[in-house]
Length: 353
Ligand SMILES: Cc1ncc(COP(=O)(O)O)c(C=O)c1O
Image (cartoon, rainbow, N blue to C red; front, side):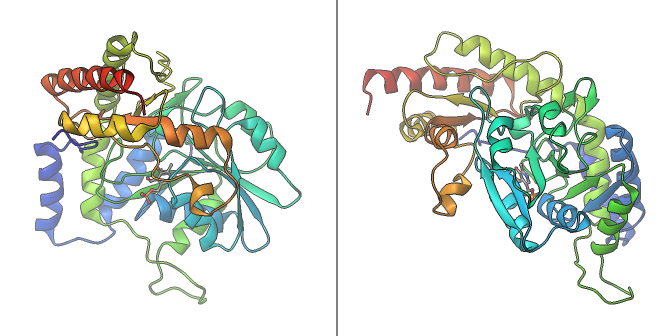
């Protein structure tokens, strides 16, 4: 089976991690500091603080902004439950927004309608690696937590994502564009916000007492992160090349294809196609051809909460399918995926549900 996701790990990555293991300095130390510095340089917007996951990064970002009970935070519904969890960790109220008409990112107009006097932040992901309409959101004058978990290395008007939010976060989970196994990063120009994040990620030998967390990254993870970061431009070029190959090969199929923009504003973390019918049958056909596809979001948050369905999110959840796209795919596997997609489309067309 061709898996839906797979990290790209080479000998340099293995060497970097094993060197740290052999050194015996396993916990947060020099490598974490070096990774923070290198990552901050690559984003180009103030310092960075490494943490144990993207979820931890979101949690600490909300705490740094002073968000808590009685506050409202706008989040997408078409996203993983990490965002909902983070808002619930701080006791704030999640307000769900729908996606746009021609994008899987949240719709600025829909968000505007949901702003109240209690709105304290918008968590704005660049979903599937496609940059959101940042200008529209920044004009709202509400603090933005820029969620770059799926978009490391993507650019907006020539500048790296993560440099627009009041505070911004990244994830290095195993299936992400670059990985540390588990891991996350918080970036901000606002030194006071970052100081809070730094202060809260570690509980040991600190006074005065307050609730703190063990959200530290290890030096083993950071060594892997440093090694992966060197390959990030190649990862993105390879993802873009595969996306272009898919788009050319699928242009005559009756499916909606992702926007291909040659300006770096999408890094193709996911290649998501929109079917005319429900995704289940297509996913089964792909599995029968030896290719694991997936719904790009497990369940929309409105569904998890039993809340009223958001129409465009609901439609995308029912019909969107994520096709494998990652640098570890070889040319033969890519050809096989293309053939399998064409075959699955023919079968689903021939006998609609
Ligand atoms: C958009 C988005 N934000 C945040 C997260 C949370 O990251 P992590 O899994 O590292 O906790 C994810 C993870 O999949 C994500 O896709």
